[in-house]
Length: 398
Image (cartoon, rainbow, N blue to C red):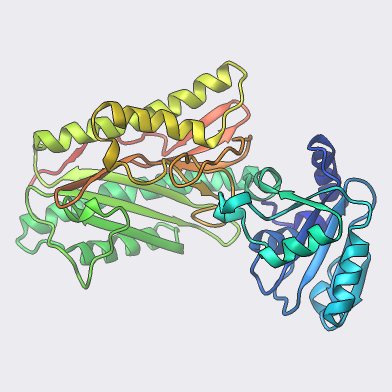
């Protein structure tokens, strides 16, 4: 995710062509239309297109483009040759010419829609590529490497953002306790507003958001209150999930923290918390062990490890989402997810990608417990943020 669009530079094109050779691909076809394919738009540096465009990065030679005759202004930054078309017949003919001689060509597609975040090229366009004689294959691993991998600057910023978010989360529990002590307890909605203000004050001002839920409402993993929601009262188990980033070219930090409005935690809540924490830590340990052994690791494998801990504790039916999501310029990014439930994400975790690790247990009508940390998968293994993840339930003295 370079600040300079990758494919407008010779160095960037050379990097992609090296990867194409390693993967035995004849090219990468980047399709874009009105922002539908945000991956292509970012890599190509386009802002707004109103007609279909196709850019082929071949294994060897210069990139070539096919753009609409009225779109020259949208492509004036593009340094490589392009041809134009006006009508659909001309477009289809020239697309076939663009792909002539190509065998396996990568596109932002996913067989069976297995990975929706890279399934961005319409089925009809895939049919046109196939009709040209080329074989469409998923660009998923290319996307991880050239779109979702963080730059060194983004990693530095993510570390700082993660610490801001952790401080805001801890302060939010103290604020909830203060309000109870003073006789004017927060609602889920009013604490949400407090957290958003605190994140913005701390510099996390781009797409900041939060989920605040007391124990029973937290049983819905993506709970959002109607109006101000429930009152955060003494004795309540409280979940705070908060996220954001500092700039449009920065990556997200996303954490979930758990606490109790009181100085002791009910046995049931503590039992569930300890299972969730063990699941989270098992995933990180697995990543470290695989790297230390010089072995590759795929997203679905980490999900299996974390899920097994919860299943072995008897709560398997209540872990109803994937273990973690990719993070890049989007909160739910386009790189590999830790997922063998919602999808079977068999993409490699490659150096540079970042993701959440967030197992949870959600018992309808009773309680929801989640712990969420972030991981940057570096050359030397996983780096966890924040630097001091939550180890115990936060107990708030009233």
